[in-house]
Structures are given as C-alpha cells and as structure tokens.
Image 1: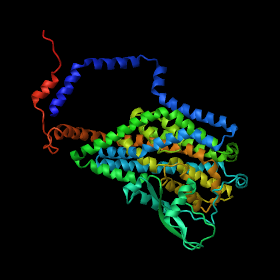
Image 2: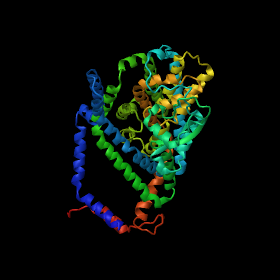
Image 3: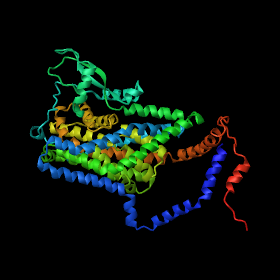
Image 4: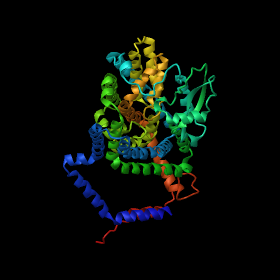
Length: 555
C-alpha cells in the first residue's frame, strides 16, 4: 500500500534528524570558505577544459619542428578520437530522451508556441549573421586576385565544367526528405541527399550503391559532387543515402511522439518516466566524461595542428579571410547576442556568457555542435538554471537547424571567392548571397566542414567559379572551430530567450502538472481503478499519524 510506504519514509525522516544537521553543517562550512576557493570550486571544470585547450596548442606547436611521422601523429590524436567517439555515442539517446521527456511535460498548445518562437528566433539570427558577414566582406575586401595563383590547391580541386553541384532547391528538398523519414531506424544510420549522375556518358551510370561507396571515401566537403573524366550531355538527379545520423527526422518524430504522449494522461506516465530516467543517466555519464576533457581536447587540437603541412604559409596567405570570419564571430558574440539578451531579459548578458565557457571550449576543440551537446545540457540546466523543459526542446532542434556561424561563413566565403575572381557583385547578387546563406545554413548538418558543401550552392547562385572555393579547404579546420562557437551560443541564447517569452505558459503548465502528478502518484498508483479521477486513497487517520510521528517526551 502507498500509505504504508509513505508512513515508513516519513518515520525514517523524523527518526534521523542528524542527517539534516549534517547537511546544514556542510552548507555553513561552504559559506565560510574564502571567496577565491569557492570560485575555484564552482569553476573547476571550466579550468580543466581551458587547460586542455592550452595544452593542446602548446604540444602541437612544440612538436611541429620535429617533423613527426604520420603514425606518431595518429597516436597523438588517438585519445582525442576516443573522446569524440564517446561524446558522439551519447548524442542519439540524449536527443531522443530529452525531446520526448521535454515535449511530453508540456501540452500541445504550449509546444506549438515554443516551436514557433524558436524557429522565428533561429531565422532572424541566421539572417543577421548573413547580413553581418556580407557587410564585413564588402568593407574589408579579403579576396585577393593573386591568391588563385599563389596558394597551392589540393587534389580536391574540381572543375566546374566536369562536375554538377546540387542547387538550393535540391538542398531544401533534401531537408524535407530528412525531416520526414520513411524509416525511423534507417534515420539513425543514414540521411538522404541529392546527387547528379550523367545520363549520357562513355559508360553506364553508376548504381546508387557505387556512388554511395565512393562518397564515403571522399572529402566531407565534396560529398555532394561527382567528378567525371568527360563532359556529359545531361545530368540525372538521384536521391541516395549517405552514412550519418538523420537528426532532423529523429527530432521531428520525437517531438510528435512526446507531444502526443503528454495528451494520453496517466497511461503515458511510465513511458515519460522511462525517458526521463534515460536522460538523467546520460547526464551522469557526461559528468564522468568531463574529467577526461584535458586529455581528449589536448589530443584533438595537437593532432590537428601537427597534421597541417604548412600552417604558416596558409595562415599568412588567407589571413584577411580568417580575420574577417573571426571579427564577425566576435562582433556577433560580444555585441549582437549580448544586446538581444539584454533587450529581452534585462539582465547582465556577460554573466550568462561566462557560464557557457566550458561548452564553448569543447565546441571549439571538436568543431561540432552535436559533440558538445551533452556538455551544453549540463551547463544550461545545472549552472545557468534554464528550465529543463525548454532546454530539452530547443537545444536538440538548434543543434540541427540553427547555424549562425555557418550563415556568416557562407556569406563571407561567397564574396571572398567572387573578389578573388575579380567579380563585381551588383545589389541583386548581394541580396542573393544573404538569402542563400540564410537558407543554406538552416539545412546544414552539425558535422565538421559541412558548410563547404553549402558554399558551393551559394557560389552557383551568383555564378562564381566553384573551383576557387577549394582554396578554403586548407584553413577550414581552423575556421570551422571558430564558427562552431557561434552555432553553439546561438542555441543557448535561444533557449534563454524562449524561456523568458514562455514564462507565463510555463507557470500555468507547472500548476496543471502539479495536480496531474498528484493524481498520478497518489490515485493511479495506489488505486488502479481510479482512472485519473481525483479521489483520496489515504484515510485521515493515516495522514495524522504520519504528521505526528515525531517522538515526544512525556513531561
């Protein structure tokens, strides 16, 4: 009986008052600690992450003069590879559990309002980043026509006459195909994308499986391109599947599943608790992984620095391009984001920014918003105290749709390639760059170097030479890390602003959930025939016995 269990718990609570005293003593001792020690205690994980970044940079540049072999570099980067694999291992169960438990705790009407506010915010901020990147590229003019001759282009050079890129329409259609997958299990392993194969060539057109196998061995930046030795007369559009989690389809399915799960009342209570328990377990796993951060992050950064052949030459030749991207990222993070936060919440935005240092450093090291998602959840829920229902709703969606840094990068890179090719862009082409960068960024995947594929779409829209974009491959490993911080911060600030805009609905939902949970825990579990009706199962005498169960000494 539930009444007996509650009586036992209450008696244990009253019979052990020393536990409360010990807890109060610990709180008093914590208050008596010096402020600097308390600061170190509260921010120890941030310092651990920062030490990993600095250690990786020092190791990487210190070992470059030794000209290490490829095997040695691989061994140095191996701990970082394992660290990334562990983080990616937790992404899928974390996204599924967070979305289902978060959306089920809110009613369908509130879910719709939160989704609308989230998507509007993502669209506006992506457009702001595209405008900012365009203005900076036109003002700084980073494109130098001599770069085309001085910079050595790698083997990934692709001639525009022998390849066909996907268009913006194809990218948007692929976005819809991935949002609505035809197989939820396949969505966990593969995602749909459009490729073009020649309909008239010397040999038969390759089968989808052949093209699929070829795409897995190519560079991530050219996964949507097909290279042919001869110019085909016509191209045929083919929809294929490439390896990688279709996060958009999983997000959509979990949102619908969780929203409908919250409408069936007490019958879905066990399922909601199941996914909530999974979320808590994953977050505890994240806490354990955090102590491996110095080794993993330092290994990642050191391995990447050692793998670049001539880092000094590339950095000097493309210094103005890197400077333009970095300036745009800093202006957006330190001015635009802070202004948006202050306008809505009327709070100190830099305090919120400092609370996200750890996921920012992790996103910079991994160059992936998805890989840093477990840490972002931990900081947003535990450190910044953002409502978990909002973070479980906004962060997984933003991880796949909101790419502020990618929008800025595509805008700057498109104008950079045009300037390098001595193209003079008119007003219509500039507007095309802004709109294409915004639309393409929202269809980007949260994987490293995914923006390079979308850059080819923007270049095709303004008829810029696609082959010149390969110059950016040499520095994308570094620029990708810079723009990833924009993507990550955009998701976090979106969660804070959406929580503020939805505060009244959340308060009403809290009141409804209080009575609903009271019905479920007291009536449905104790009396299986209650059927969700409010009915007292505990006699008044039992309640009185619980309340007065403290030992009283006789006078």
